[in-house]
Length: 244
Image 1: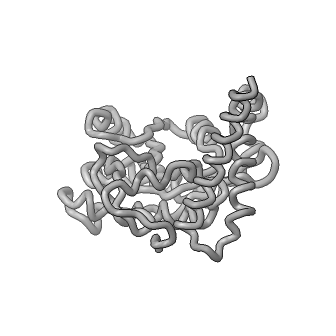
Image 2: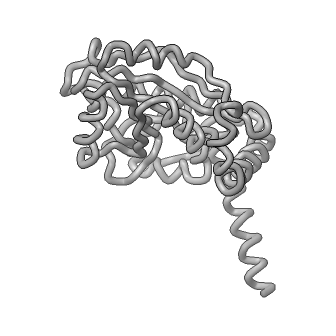
């Protein structure tokens, strides 16, 4: 029992140190990393609590936990009849954000949007639906993009869908406002098809990756992936502190 407790304590310390190192590498040594690390673990715990004990109350409580800002961007985009891609990082309680969107719009949620998943999404967008796409998920088999100045395997489904169907991309993130209340921020649509050809998905995605970076820097304590972001930088030598 003592060995198990000691092992658990060491594992927690290792994860905590890793989060600190990754925050320092991405945000810079001048960032208040100690405070952000504490906030990060607090946010993770609160989000888990919400999923386990609060989520079942959402249908009864309606939208009173949510404070949307800029939702008119999504509504005006849908008036064009091409559907809309709500493109987001894993910030805040993104599960609750999807619940909100699914109650107000015909909405599908996708983590990666790889080629095998695109067919039903194309059809959904052609019917003026909304696709909620979390774009910062990483797997070794994904094509390379750039995030935080490093080559990183990232999905390109958002640009593929946008360029093929002329669907606008609405940058978005959810952050905790206070307690169990959530701020939902919708940004002006990106009409990628006006600037890129259909065979320029990699170039179009760099614009979206830039948004992901900006969102993480805006709400650093609520980004989920601090615990393993260093594992994404497997295509180059990585040295702490070199990421701009």
